[in-house]
Image (tube, protein in one colour):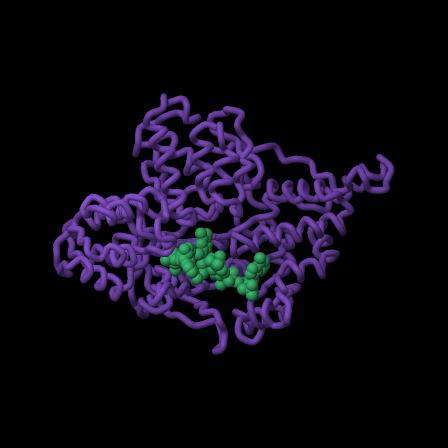
Length: 529
Ligand SMILES: Cc1cc2nc3c(=O)[nH]c(=O)nc-3n(C[C@H](O)[C@H](O)[C@H](O)COP(=O)(O)OP(=O)(O)OC[C@H]3O[C@@H](n4cnc5c(N)ncnc54)[C@H](O)[C@@H]3O)c2cc1C
Ligand SMILES: NC(=O)c1ccc[n+]([C@@H]2O[C@H](COP(=O)([O-])OP(=O)(O)OC[C@H]3O[C@@H](n4cnc5c(N)ncnc54)[C@H](OP(=O)(O)O)[C@@H]3O)[C@@H](O)[C@H]2O)c1
């Protein structure tokens, strides 16, 4: 849907550098020759993160809100006065993470063109995004078709094929803890067998998992409802529906609406306020379905109405950390386990704890492969790569390295990895050290955030070796970031800009546009969440 911009010319030597015009032109040519422009098809401008070309050609291309670190209120402000499809895009979490089956721009276009009816697919945006999309969709329903900014097509027919809509069963093989005892983290290496399930993948792709809710929580909810496990709902038992089909995490507005309908007085007012996104008691953010039922403990919805008020259970994506070329038919993941306590109750991340403790070897799990859009090894195996992946961000880079080893790719490989403590949190250390010894991993730069008195992150290590990093870039290296979207990815990008400024002899503005050009050429790719 996005139009491609022609590959822009990169000015390696800025106008401010102390060279004559002729020298500058020769040097630009020299560096351009060194820099390979191969790799995946150029990313759309949006994936480059700066400019989005709309399908309607309405000239409304800028997407200043396309920054995952901005809060929703700020994003909506930046989109004020724009066509509905653009405001819908601003409502998305801006991670282009693919969990909804689209990128942010295409998901909003699909809703605005009425090809997609589901407004709750943006997992990282959560309730805030769903609420905003609902309001914008109401505007869409009232507005004349043209005002959305995209041609209106009848629902269903135009909806694209979404991998999550056709999951298959894969076999869970095993799990192994990657942290050593004493770590504050719990990260698992997870193995699946794809034999017979018809799935295939390439490095850079992600794996979608449909998890089951924890049965202890399901049973507590059934008890709160005063219902029987076997009560029939949607042709299944209530227990099955609550385990497999609905989200028990953030209590949706529709549940508070239901609670407001079936109660009265102050409780009704409170439920109504919560349904409208207000926070009468300052606890709205921590109300999962169970906590909502406890808060309104005297109110017992009918199981059927209750299930109807819940959101469908969404799959979770994980970067694949294996290579099909190295281990055909096998697939592995690197999963950080989400557990935390609110009040007296332990809360469990749905899919991470499902993988960490609820499935057993031999179990079949509903899965799919989410093809990566613009996150892949360079087409030319000789192209050097720089991979920056702290924490679980290591996952796709383990896959890249194993793939390059299996295919005998001669390109240089540089990995930046970091985590809390070197003694406990050095994932895959034996494997990575062996790759380093064998020469496949040309450089490995490590950053341990909690080993010293002061935090030390991958971007601090990058700054220390900025000159060499710049040299690799000038040799045509592709650069990749994977891991935390909210802070790490932005901070690493900032460090990269500083390195380009310092060692590429540029002003900050020139460095920013240099990095922007790398993105547009597909030479700077991100898999962040
Ligand atoms: C493309 C992509 C690739 C990914 N790759 C990986 C990967 O390789 N490895 C990996 O581990 N993850 C990865 N993720 C993240 C993964 O999809 C899940 O989001 C993550 O595992 C959490 O899912 P969950 O179902 O376990 O937790 P959920 O049930 O979704 O719960 C998570 C939510 O719990 C809340 N929460 C978490 N901690 C706290 C706290 N301390 N206090 C209060 N609330 C809290 C937050 O609201 C958070 O959003 C990836 C995501 C994407 C989009
Ligand atoms: N909700 C939250 O508050 C929260 C917090 C952490 C992670 N997460 C999410 O949890 C998931 C898995 O996390 P993970 O296990 O991959 O590891 P992680 O918790 O993201 O940590 C990996 C390493 O990155 C460091 N780090 C923290 N902030 C950073 C920054 N701004 N720049 C660079 N490095 C930084 C951490 O240091 P320190 O921890 O010592 O600072 C740690 O050494 C991700 O989805 C992540 O987004 C959420």
